[in-house]
Image (cartoon, rainbow, N blue to C red):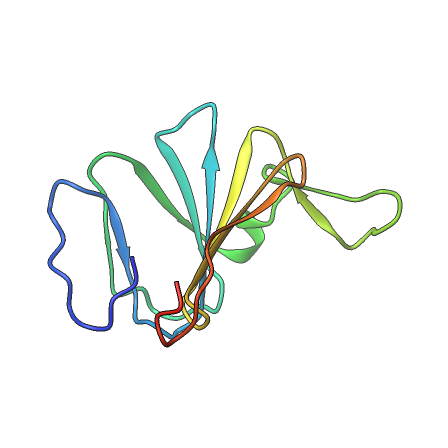
Length: 121
């Protein structure tokens, strides 16, 4: 959820709160163990609040997040390219362009929400 003003969120839901325009948050979801969500704060800004009650939300540093546990390198054409492994799904929440996208282990890329600062979504 993107919001310019303060939002009153329920204590019964999990959420990550950060200031709009600060950067990007990367999330990894495990499709085989749906209770685990791994979080990487891409630009290392301070997350305002993390509230979890239903899921195991784990904040990770860069080296742990981009580890061989979640990603593998292309060994052929693009050796510096990282690919998300099965059974994980990578979700990027970008607060500058107000967009959300996801990529799975098969390389399928999908825009969940694509917008702009003027509410173009």
